[in-house]
Image (cartoon, rainbow, N blue to C red; front, side, top):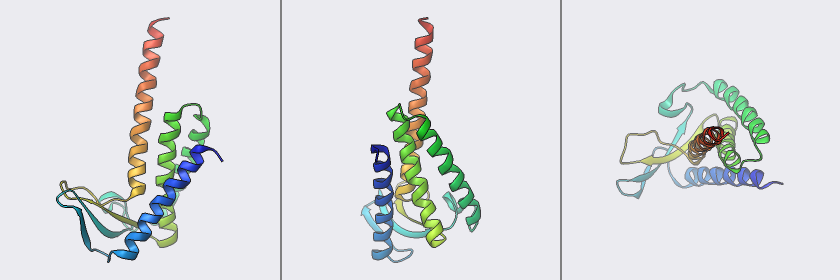
Length: 155
């Protein structure tokens, strides 16, 4: 089993463990301050996307998740030679898989991280993996574009 596959599995398991712990120890809707004024844990059941967009449209999220996973896995196989692409895609696959499994198993996604210093949707570890994965991919693309433009000007 390759290191990228192990990373995906580990991130997925961390996501599922955090969600399990929140459900087991925090009442639905309850807020627990972790770092006052910065971070709280709030157990929510989200059957939509950020800001409850498309709430209750689980069929849409099933289809989008399946397509996203297929595309991400294709690109992971295609770009196995660049660790930055592999890392970004692994993070995105783990995040997509974590939320997809929640939707299939429960009909909603467990969210818990609340940023107290800004008005931002409550999110989970899988969402963080997705966000960081997109950022890593953007950086990789920008670096490759910069390298290509620098390299082509010397030809």
